[in-house]
Image 1 (cartoon, rainbow, N blue to C red):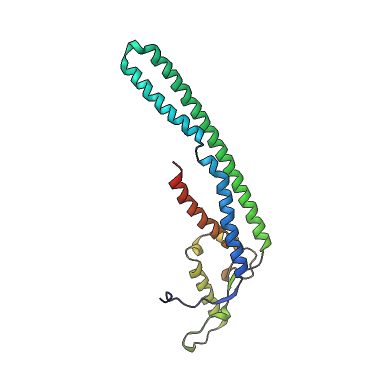
Image 2: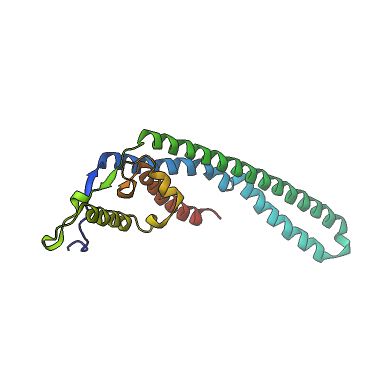
Length: 210
């Protein structure tokens, strides 16, 4: 089974070790951030038990109401217990939402700090750089430097599509690179691993979080 046919990429330089490191780091970092949020997204067993008991209490209230006026005292007692438990669970839910919002903010700040560290560590270092000199002329066609540069830039845009049409984030990842139109920076590699791992975790959470 052969490879899908594709044009040769005019790669001038490549740093596979750095790319592998950033891919692993991005995936691991995303797992760490999501792990910090996991306990606030999932209901603890104690709350699940109380919710189950509340449903049982609601059934008892309905049965007591069906009895009629003769069970008025018992019904009132059960209704007070139900109301108190509903308020307690609502308070716990609000506290968990507040804690989740606080941890979300913290995780964004931590992620921003790590991204800054990567940006300055790899500042000005392209992990992939397309080169006009690596453009292979077709059928012996002689290309000028300007023509070869345009072909290399077009190849880079195709290589990154659809990311190449996204604005600020992609441009920010190229700051400091000698040839931004022909290069891929460290942040883009790190973000790609984070995004991929994040999508996988989203699917897992959708299956596991009720």
